[in-house]
Image (cartoon, rainbow, N blue to C red; front, side, top):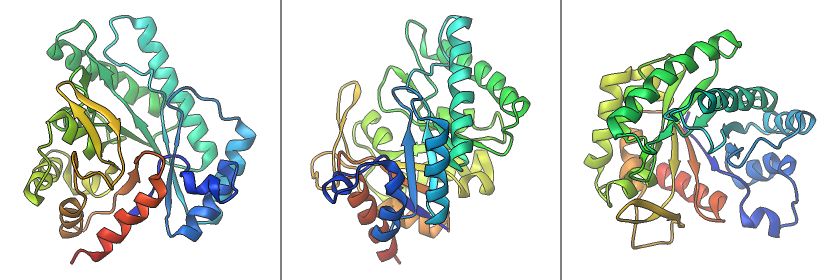
Length: 282
C-alpha cells in the first residue's frame, strides 16, 4: 500500500495549536495521511524517552515513520577518521529509528570534495560495503538504508549512481528525490516517459521486490546551473516537477512506496494534494 506524509511539521500543525511532534501522529491521521519523516539533518538531538513516546503514538495512529540521517555523512571523505564518523552517524540514527518504531533510514551518500567524480563514486562504493557489514553486525539487518538521489552537481547521487549503490546490499533501497533529480538535470522530468525511465532502470537493476518498496521524496525545487537552490511548494508553476505523470507510473506498476513531501512549510498540506492526485489517476 502506498503511503503519503510530510517531512517534519507543517505550518498548519502549529497554527492549529499543536506544539510537539508527539502530537503529530493524531494530527496526521485526522488530516488523512499515514507517513512521517523525522529529520536528524542537523544532528541527533532526540532523547530516547521522547523517541519511544513518539513511536507509540505513531503506531497507535497507523503512521509509518522514517528518519533522515545527519547531513554530515560523507562516504567519499578522504580520511578514515571522518568515514568512521559517518558510519557512526548511521548506526546512531538506526538506534533512534528503532525506538521510534520505524524501519527506513534516509541517507545522503557523499560529496565529491577535491576528488574527481569517478574517485568519489568508487570510494563511496567501498565505504558502503563496509556499512552494509556493520549494519548486520550491529543487529539492524531488517532495517532499510534509503540512499538518496542528490540535487547538486558537487554531490554524489544521480539516480543511476544510487541504483548502482543499492546493488551492494539487500538493506539498501533508493530514495528517489524527484525534485533533486529534476534540479540536477535542469528540469528534464516532464512526461510519464521521463519517470518511467527511472523506474524501469530500478526494476532492471534491483528487481521487483526492492522497486516495490522504494522511498520517495517529492517537492518542487528551484534550481540554477549547479543544481538545487531551494525547496518550493506545489503552487509553483516555474520549476516543477509535476506529480501527475509519476503517479501514473506508480499506479501502472502497482508500486507501494512511501512518499514524503518536502514542500517548504506546507509539507503536510502538499502531501495530501499528492495523495489526492494519486487517487485521481486511473
